[in-house]
Amino acid sequence: MNPVKVISVISAFVAVTSISVAVLMLNGNKAEEVPVIIMEEETVENPVETEFTDGEVVVTTDISERNYDFKVTTETTIATSLPVYPYVPANSGMNDYSKYMRKYNKDFVGWLKINNTQVNYPLMKDPGEVQPNTGYGSAYCPADEFYLHHDFDRNYLFEGTLYMDYRDVLGNDETKQSENIVIYGHNMLNDSMFGSLDHYYQIDGFYNSNQFIELSTNYKEYGYVIFGYIITSGNAGVPFDYWNWEELDCKEDFDWYVSNIRISDMIETDIDVQYGDKLLTLSTCYQDADNSRFIIVARRLREGEKLYDMSTIQRIPPPEPVTEETNPEENQEIVYEEYYEE
Image (cartoon, rainbow, N blue to C red; front, side, top):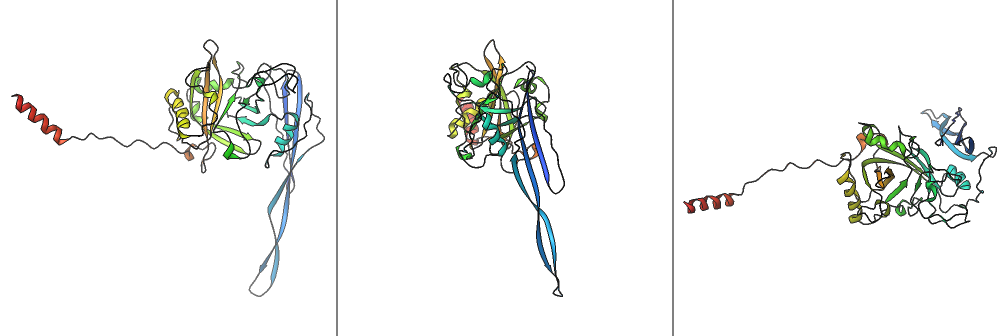
């Protein structure tokens, strides 16, 4: 199967700008065109009065203010097997692109991108345990497995779609978001889905120029900086069952999770990670023989930190130098013992 391809067309004009973004998904010979969003930019002329010393008033025009209006075109035909859902926003702030996408699949939660990899895909939320004939096909499917082998249209596709754990919360209210968003994807041989994540441990120096992750949610765009990646077990009952740790509400749980990454980290970083940071965990297969996983863990950028600018990232302060101090009393005791033995 061919991986998902994204084609973006941007047209800009002076004074009034129209931006059309078309997304084309290719699955074999089947092409499905999904939403075209129009953003209209209107220049607003604001009169400004300037009074001179002689009493003359001159009216000038300030054209620095611009208003933006997002519209969804009705001319595009969408080839999809899914029903169109009536959109009723759960809370305010959802962008128009996500509103449109969710009409065709209400599990859509955003877009994930990592530079210099093939990770540039829509992100779904697993629907949890799926019962037959509930909009996901005629078969039962356990939690966290549906998008393992289904595409955006919920049709069978072996390579599946990137999806986050069904227990994760990634809404508009950041105070209610999960402390750790766990995202799953296949390690495909053609590097699609999460197949190209192996560049981090296979290519020397790859991390040094690719430390950031972009996550555009239905409400806001976030940047993350990678602070570690490890190979670990995916078997049930292991001590570090990372997939069960979405809610790191207390400092003890948060520190335990981060320490498990630091202890087995395949690369040493001095990126500061503290309780209260939001984490992102990307999970893919490493070897089928032992059911091992390769996971990358990143933290959300803090205020003042900039995407793709490592000089702005807060680091762990270097340890203070340790000096050995001699206890005079201990030396006197040793001298006394030696004298007594003589």
